[in-house]
Image 1: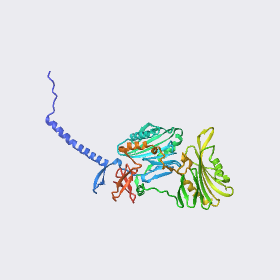
Image 2: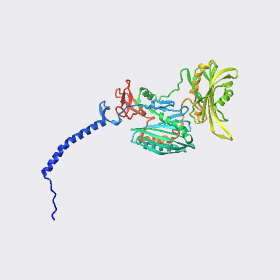
Image 3: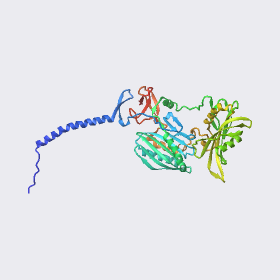
Image 4: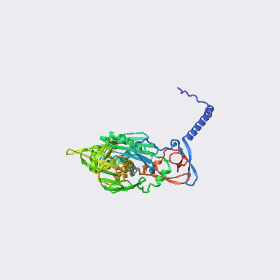
Length: 490
């Protein structure tokens, strides 16, 4: 049986169809080309940059990087400490210790490091996800704490393109701790916020630690004040005092001393000052590891007569002062009495008591500090502000006692100059940080970059923290001009 042949279209008809299809396709192709050109036009925005020869060359800036340059303005109820030379601010609870070391900000309740927050920023040199950065920093902390005999691990990790977080489980000096490590990534810049506290006090401390983490902010608009601070960053900062005061720096204590006062006594446990006319004075002292059980009121009733010679003591109701130290009670009292039994005086005493959590052979132990402001009744109204200034400026330089911040009135944060944090105590932290960041990122807390102004040609060193991932001309460093407009530095 013969196979049936399928009919074939004539050759002339095939050519005709192809021609017709091409004619019909040309408008569609033109429309597609126009659409592609329009899409490319809207995706990229051409700008110009100054070349080394003084000419200009086009720079392609992706639309996703175009935006407004803004400073961080976190809502923060804590005392603010500004580092203009590094373009950031931190919030530090009164009485807590803070330091900036190894590119890391450490904010600690005390030098045990068991209740603490850590802040770190980095300008990425390689593409890293938020989760990768979290893992790398977790490894750095693990190595650091392991080398001092502790343990550290991250669990319950969660991550997306911009944020990664993990639960901290750690132990340091026999204290079991928990906390959180959080990484935020915006384009090519990373901010790490981390904190921990002993497990038994974590719920109580968590809100304070979260506020410390949230108070951190970067200054992305470069001002003349910032540039001046950068220029002066290596100049030794001299201690300054208000008008009418000198900085007194003794063996054990430092404070702002009125020019008409003199230090009459200083030991490792206290300091006394007296005005030249003997009508006003200030005294501070502390005791640690003493036996007994006291409240601020009962200690004031004991200390004023016994240690300050105040007789016929009349003590007002106490005013509680919030203390950042877990377990510490601080109160202040107005009082009247007679010095050594025959000179009438008015004054104010601030007392802090912290009771140890243990007993020895059934005996309770405690530590206490007290600051006494005193003047004759006639001189008290005009003397009390001066005496308060002395008390507020008091710093401990060198004493043998531990937990020094429990021995001062909680009136301000304390900047550590002796390397109190785990990040400065352990050489492993610095080694591991340098090893990890050598190629992957640059420390922004301590890093600077040299740039120039296209309008003036002036050259500046600017903090890496002032880098903006968005801007009217794309990512970069933006300087505020006298008319408040911004120019991108090259």
